[in-house]
Amino acid sequence: MKLEVINAFLTAARHSLSQELQSEIKRTGLFVDPSENAIDEVAVYLSFVGQVRGTMLLGFDLTTARKIASAMVREPLAELTEMGLSALAELGNLIAGCTCIELEQLGFSADISPPTIMIGARSRISTLGIRRVVLPLATQHGHFNLHVAVDIT
Image 1 (tube, rainbow, N blue to C red):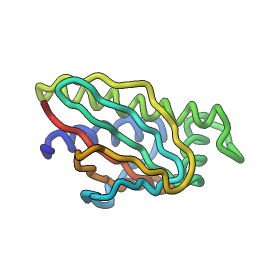
Image 2 (tube, rainbow, N blue to C red):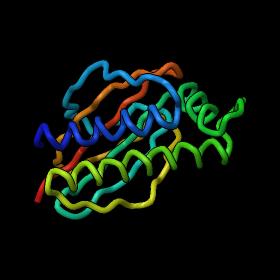
Image 3 (cartoon, rainbow, N blue to C red):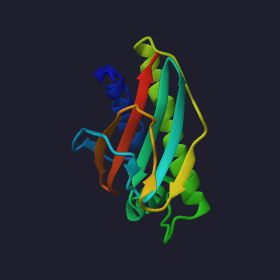
């Protein structure tokens, strides 16, 4: 996976998150995860098709997911309601859409699927042989992971 493609995802995430959450976003690491398991409790999953193919996941623990959803809907959520899940799905859409713009500037085309939200610890997700790069991110609402598993055709 090309570094410029990973940077497109990171740039898009920073831009979208800072706009929606009105807070600074910091990358706290970067690693390739060879396992098929995503251990995040809440995952927002989107697919990419076109010259850039694969998946993007936003992985949160339940508390961080609720805090980010609360910030997005501008009201406190005691639990992750349908409105909160919709906010997280929209966050996935925003990051993926912004990523498509960044990729286009690099000369790559991609389209995205509608988001899917998975809830439950230890969900098993296979990227079918495509290496998954994990970018841990920190916000004032908590830490979460941006998982990127894409291939360029």
